[in-house]
Image (cartoon, rainbow, N blue to C red; front, side, top):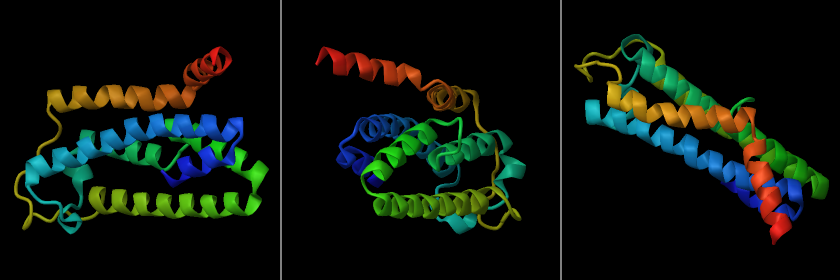
Length: 173
């Protein structure tokens, strides 16, 4: 959300539009990630990360969703966060290149943490001494995550939906 603040204070159209897209994307992707963590907590009743290893073997559908939302969180192209982060960096770079460099560095560090977490939870050896029951997403959880997935890719592939609405709002204002 610091990137959103930088985009707003850049004061140009690219930064502000990027901030709005990034806020919408953050609501979608973070909501989905919180739901995923809630699914894990509901099954295993622990939030300690070291107990989760090798979930790709026991919960493959869950891990596909979790990996996609993690990649969406760090701004992978064709996901909704990429467009917002790209526009914010363009807007920031036109005002102050050193701030754009520092914010880009922060984005890389955030991406590294997200990838570390995804790797830690999904891959490795299963620790059966800490978690006893493994079962994948049920239908309800699958159908809850599907709209999040759809919106993540829709905004990333076709951001004109939001940009055209913002253009119409600015003209009428």
